[in-house]
Length: 147
Image (cartoon, rainbow, N blue to C red; front, side, top):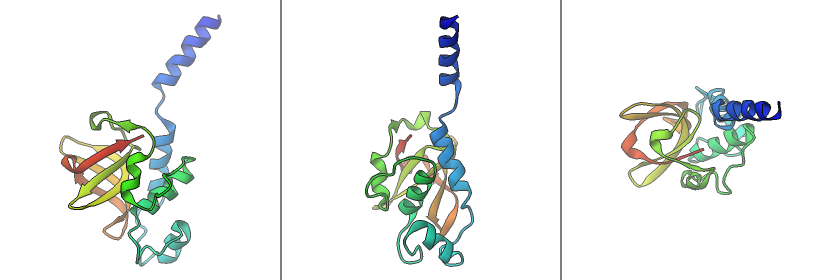
């Protein structure tokens, strides 16, 4: 009887999705559409900075992580600091809710994976065209996936 219960618990543990990643995706979606100027007061209160004057993708991720019960990196406001968040995951094993750091030129951007195709990574993030939205990045731009 005890062996059967142990085996059942193991099956559930391995078959269940990672709730921490799913929780971050759920939290991020709640802010979709908020604009750094039109919704400045609400974003400023949530982020603790003025998004119209400060690069805020990392700040948004810090908000999302905390609301999902995760601990953001110490310098969470800097996109590159998310390279040290959670555990590393190979891009081929990435799943919705994972944190993705991309590189665009000399700068970094961070968001939450919504979907991965053969050529693109769809990320929900802040400071994407001045708002929280879904944006598409080439898989070649992905620097790291973290869970």
